[in-house]
Amino acid sequence: MTQISNLPAHKARNLIGQKKLSSTELVKSCIEQYEKHNPNINAIVAIDQKDVLEQAKKCDEKVSKGETLGLLHGLPVGIKDLQMVKNLRSTYGSLLFKNYIPKHDDNIIKNIREEGGIVFCKTNTPEFGAGANTKNRVYGATGNPFQFDLTSAGSSGGSAAALSLNMISLATGTDYGGSLRTPASFCGVTGFRPSPGMVPSTEGIVLNPFSVAGPMGRDVTDAYLLLQGIVDINNSDIFSSLNSFSLPAELIPSDLSSIKMAFSTDLGCAPVDNEIKKVFLKKIEVIKSCFNYTNNDHPNFLNIHDCFEVIRGFNYVASHLEKVKNNKELLGPNVIDNVERGLKYSMKDITWAHQEQTKIYNNFRKFFENYDVLICPAASVSPFPHEQLFVEEINNEKLPTYMRWLALSYAPTMAIPCAWALPCGLDHKNLPFGIQLIAPAGNDAKLSEIALAIEDALSNHEETKRAIPDIV
Image (cartoon, rainbow, N blue to C red; front, top):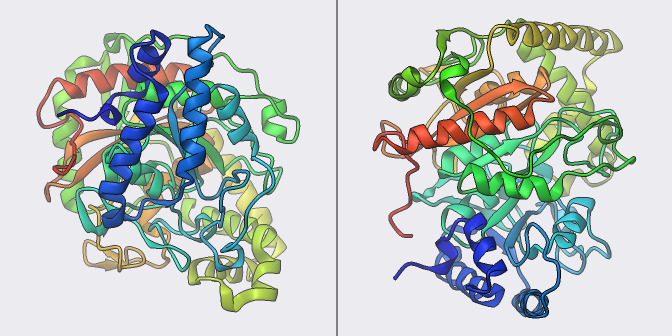
């Protein structure tokens, strides 16, 4: 029998509004999936079932009274454990906060509640989001829904895995160097990295356009629904206060015959497994004819690796130096490595990195004078064992840092993009494969319309439609 929790979020929301489905029924179905699958995969790390059922009951009462319902009314949402939820254990994946119970909701949680969303659980993340393998010393590792001993990637791996196994309807993620996009690819779900300020942050470094929060779902329409619920203007986030939002109420797919598409296996800078390149080119061949124009091309990402590592390094120093100074023994190797690496950079290095990042940004914007969307793989390798902390080599070449395998994601980040990750069938190992759709910041609505059209085109072919875990 098909589980209620399998319903796309937007369809479940419509049924709730039509009184054909209760929030309680949906929540109970998600709890059933959680109890069935989470012991094997460890995606959800904190849940208060009594509170969740009480939230659902209140949602049902609003429906029965004919009250105005929010965009997310009655939908169970998983919250990445980097975002604080009032009265629910929130650890950042760190021993420093292993027993922390917040007394307030983060801004994104407030917006979800205001739109009627049910805060269902916390989802696993590596410590402070450092690293693309969801694994920490508080909760352990999150497995891959398609093979439990493999990683779900990170740092939004718990959200992606829980979505893939229908434990939740929607989920939040965050993204700096691919933390939302890579897990979406590894778990066969959808994620969107919005422009800076679209989803305002009241935490962390104010002048940081690289780290953003975004929505995750099982399809574009679902993720877009959550995006609509969490966009906001908040003066605590300078990029939010400078933003102007223009998201259409209903997402209409683009006519791809009018769209100019560039595609690249490696963006000219990223180490990518040769087999992944072959898989990507085969997938692209399936949909190339849908577009007005296609070309194998990419922006100029000259000096991207050093630029990224310097900027990421000093951001980590600003965020975590005091923790390393005072509680180093409680921190994992990724956080320590990032801070210590950042401390080695001089003012000259930092000045150079800002200058290079400006060049990368300008090259990126100029590139899109000729294209509407850039498509590349969403991950450089297939899912790997979660016991392996990171990818050490690609194509028999040793990588210089633990972050280098993420260059497909962090290169666009340095250019200030918006980007979708879409599931695109299976790879050469019969594991989930995803593609990344990229455009300059400020094109969130247009790129979402393109993503919806591409998703539809992909769904028409067996080799490119979304793969679903056998156990669902």
